[in-house]
Amino acid sequence: MPFSEKICPACGASSRDSEFSGNFCSKCYSERAEMRMPARVELSICKRCGKMGARGWSLPTSDDIEALVLSRCKGDYDSASAHIEGEFVNLEFTFIESGKEFAVKRTIPLKLRDTTCTECSRKAGGYYEAIIQIRGEDEEKIKRMEQKISRLVSRSSFISKTNWIKEGVDLYAGSKRVAEHVISNLGFKYSKSDKLAGVKDGRRIYRRSLCVRV
Ligand SMILES: [Zn+2]
Ligand SMILES: [Zn+2]
Image (cartoon, rainbow, N blue to C red; front, side):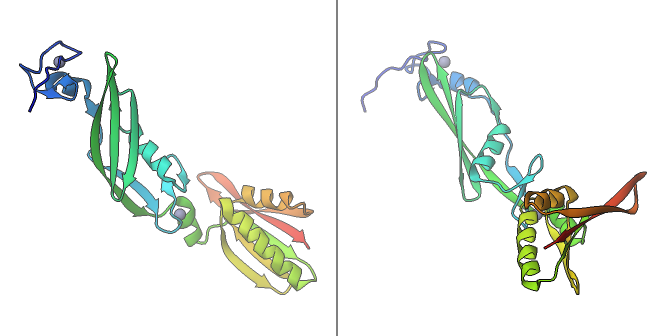
């Protein structure tokens, strides 16, 4: 095999005297590629809705997960990329030294931990902050509105109970802010009232009723 001499761009060592990794001598290579990264990355995923817990809960894309893994890796690299492959994340860090580029590859295991997010555990526990009361004479109209409002509320909160009564239907909504937002966005006139539901940590807790006529 023909042997062509390499000179380490960082320290000037020759490949005749030292071991090399890529364009650098092994010593400079490992010094320059000093990386601190977790042995593995654990992610909390809600087993009910699939949302990922990291500064709040949201449905993760693989880009989100890759960015999260990279944010836990520390080093003086010039660029980095991450790709999920099954239960592993393949990482590649690129270092530029004296105009030359070299890459360090690492693979770390990805562990998905089953958990239940705040919203799903509240929903399972029957939690609600507001009751949306849909009232009217036309049953079909009420049914259509019930489906529409449920769908819209569930986008950013949840309905923990749907209770049909003679006069219409009551929807128990997880967030009064979301419930009211949905109803006013639909352009309905509604009346609201607050009822004291209890005291928590010295604060009075009110449940809001929003009454819509269709
Ligand atoms: Zn060197
Ligand atoms: Zn969830």
